[in-house]
Length: 223
Image (cartoon, rainbow, N blue to C red; front, side, top):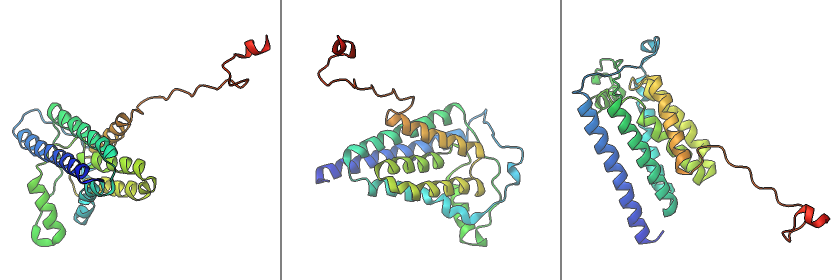
């Protein structure tokens, strides 16, 4: 990649990060002051265990973002990735605005109990329990795994399991409902398909005239 293309790539990456982080925290803070908040727990979801050590799985999202930047060295494909991320982020922001959801099962955390509790308490402080549905953690993780699998097919064997670990972690560190995870996955899948124009049934290929390559029809060749 030339220096000029590298600068364009850096600028695009910066735009995505600013839009993502800036918009997320503005909406998160604004939602905390709103009325009409929704809740989406399953009846048994409050009984799921809390595993603070899975905060490491939760933090894998930073690795996914880094993989996107570091592993794609084709600017034209990176532009498609940026398009996918901007679409994905915008879908989330619209849903957060029209259907605000609060997560209600966060436990009380004592950061003195160890490094995992300290990290969880930091995230609880940084990220208010809104912007829950769909999970942006899940959407971004699976979207990256789909995009990089297409770019380098072997990466799917690594990234898909890591995305599943992220999905498990967001539930068991008490950040998201299961409904958030499922919805996040389908947002990622839909955005990926829309980005590459594959959202729908492909038309079957036309069958070549088996008789001749000169443009004559079968009827014409018989007559």
